Image 1 (spheres, rainbow, N blue to C red):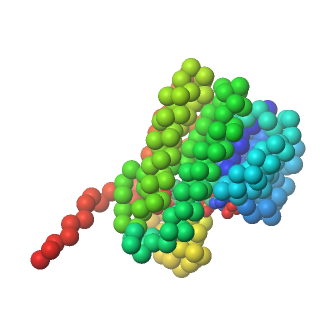
Image 2: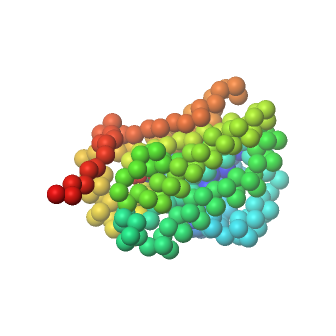
Image 3: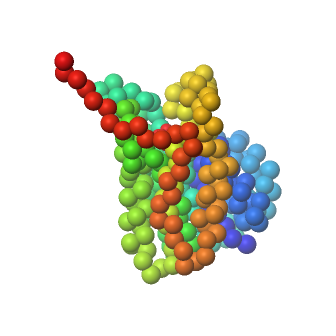
Length: 249
Ligand code: NDP
Ligand code: 8X3
């Protein structure tokens, strides 16, 4: 049985991806901070084929302890989905909170590279695949995107760099770069403002978590000789609107 290791399995893309892999007969490891949600997901998917690891991506010691607790039958990881991440705030740089910037960097960059480094030996052994969840925010800047966009630009470039470094190992690496998708993402970004989240997605027909889960699974299931380097995807009702111009008079 193949194994997918999915970070951020408590909601959104990660939970949908866990369900998708499990439906196709894979066993899954799901991670996150919200233990009750992880346990509920494992119960839903079946404890024989799903396993929860409860830790904060920013806590290296907790991550290490969780990884060393993995039972033998879950250690041969075929696909790592680096999905856990967040945006905090939409304030322009001068008004943004430094604490928010640091949390995004610690989660989206430091946490992601740490777990990748730790799971690389298993992925190389399995000739597996790494699917990193980046964002269009890493390519197209927008006001208030500042550090969030910067972290996702890192994820995209790190993915391309990993491809180069893993040359000859058979390990595939993909950066998936979604646009607007309705998950808990905006709820988190706005500090729990459901009204703001609903308003953002209203009338847009945004991407869904299942759309992204399908893409993650498709990328993972491609033949061993095929590598999707980058996959940028947006809802039809979202597109780029170009530059802003400030007039001095
Ligand atoms: P959700 O908020 O629904 O899910 C985020 C997941 O990340 C949760 O499972 C959460 O788990 C986990 N997570 C966040 N911080 C931590 C942490 N410190 N430690 C452990 N787990 C953490 O959002 P999405 O599903 O939308 O987001 C998934 C990824 O997709 C993110 O990397 C996001 O940046 C990216 N993305 C999202 C887009 C969107 O429009 N929705 C578009 C492009 C990219 P828990 O809180 O339980 O710890
Ligand atoms: C999330 C997409 O455009 O809200 O990564 O930054 S966006």
